[in-house]
Length: 342
Image 1 (cartoon, rainbow, N blue to C red):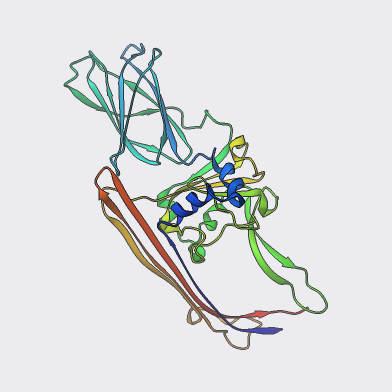
Image 2 (cartoon, rainbow, N blue to C red):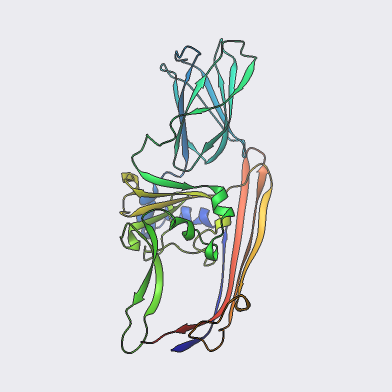
């Protein structure tokens, strides 16, 4: 048995204009061109589609569809085609209100339609005969619950899960590895007669493949590290912390050719943005040896101090027009580790 002397780690990370400059540079410098091409087809937005009918089930062509994001005021409009159908794509994830108008019918308002990253939500709107000046709140008939527009096997991790569930080291990987077929693996040299096994890092394995088979996308940009084996960390400054994540999608099987270059899984993140309302948080998570018990192999408890802290703030620059969101996360860690020799 040997004791490795006290090690100190000091790191910090932030997400503000950083993602913007990385995206801009990826279009400029050839060494990153492969990453940019890889991410072009990545879907980090949502789509809403559906049809509009009357009480008899007859389609209503030419109906005006207007959707509005509840948090940012983003508005998109379209009209139904000859078959009464409509599609609006490239929408940021969030909750939307859908307003449907057609001549000879009452205005229909569907509230709280949830769009998640990479998803296509299908709704059916039934209009009542009446004056256009009249309006009625209707519940959206969301069809179907099971995704039928894609063959991929995927799971969406929603904002409430990202920020409310307890996460070891405040890392999103704790949520990723909860999905079927995914697990955390350790790179380690095998033990020898001269010493113990050496831990040289870890990675996420998908369906038994190496870490290089998993792609990590942040707002459509390839964010895997230089070795393409594992995501970075917020404290190191090369990945947003969980406070900066809106939600993310884990695709484990049958993903489209848009994600070429990944054979195991794709983890696609959507970052938070500012809204019309001010919002933010401040936090610190502490681990200390006073909370620990002595290991069987330690004569006394080794020193351990870990402080992970940060703050996030978002809000409007101009209501319904421009917003900002920034996040800072820091890590201070001092520890001594014990290794067992064979």
